[in-house]
Length: 197
Image (cartoon, rainbow, N blue to C red; front, side, top):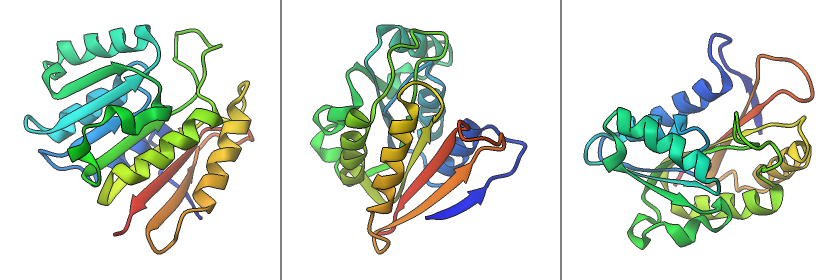
């Protein structure tokens, strides 16, 4: 796994969006596997254009409400299907004609900002979601995963993701680890996985 430090003027979420924007075109399909406050969902809906479509998943009603408000104000809601579902069964909620055709999938893990911090993503649900994401990804498509070591459960999840990316075939996938500009063991990490073929 190649370790890169992205330019310091951008946040880790900006860096994830930059990497996804590089592979998205109008009319594409994309997935926000962890909707949260809807920022990545908005970004994806904006980038796929009027003919593109986005699916957003989150287990919390509050997250989907916040995303609905953001998308509605921007008049992008018609491009998005929001589902109150866990990402661990990602493949169950995606239409079969999307398999192998999704250009961008985003995971921003941890807990809902300004929400209940006891509700977190966990390795036992994130790893199956990542496996499903690989099946959905189009050639040249990309997955971004932001992990947050340092909170309860975050270290274990980040360790599991590191192990998962080490197991990917280098013939089929390119993997980059982009480190946060904030030093420390609890700094967020961005994993970028691109399907080569």
